[in-house]
Length: 281
Image (cartoon, rainbow, N blue to C red; front, side, top):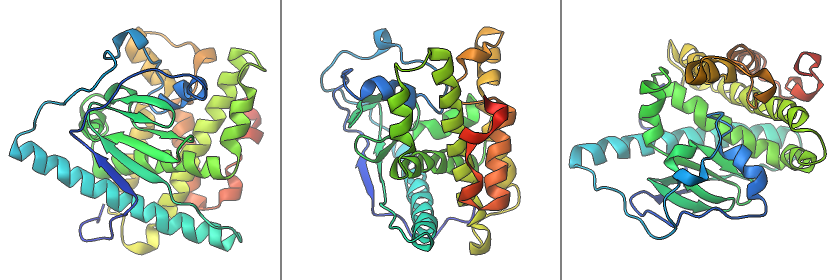
């Protein structure tokens, strides 16, 4: 991805090295426990969270800090590129895009949806319209998930921005209203549709970068590889040796790749209504 020298977003809060209170709250967090892990597909294990209180992360070496700062610069550029695309798309639809804020943290921090830890993975909080990312996930994406390349991380960021777009369009609220009104298995199906739509929206963003000389050869494949690596079926198979389809909340590897590719090829937001796809019922 040709990102060096491009505009960096100013909608960034840098909390790296600050630590923060880690505590599980109530209210909207009941819904966000799902959203926090929407990228990784796991469950928050409260017993493994640090005891509430201020915590400081281990200091980094100068070399580590320089590498971390480069990653921070990269995600700022990606956020700026999403701002350009979604401002244009919303404007063409006669609406105004409200840009989200990106929070960079290390170890743990507080969000409008409760606590956030590195173990949560990147997530979007509709409670405060902010994306939360611990940049250590960049390395985890390559080492744990086998999805190297800067555009794999760009896919992660654009997926979370996709959740922000869903919030602006009212889709997030509709999903939250289903909580407790349908069975858990049925709710999981809607969660899959919700996540696949965010994948589609990430693809729409990537489509609109084609004419900006942003993409390099192999970038699309990096994103597809990342989508493949985090499918529910693959994660469950690798984690426990078998799959439980009724517990899927994000979609299979094949589904995630399909919807990202569809967004990438069409660039048309109107073609991303995953909730009307009979194959997902």
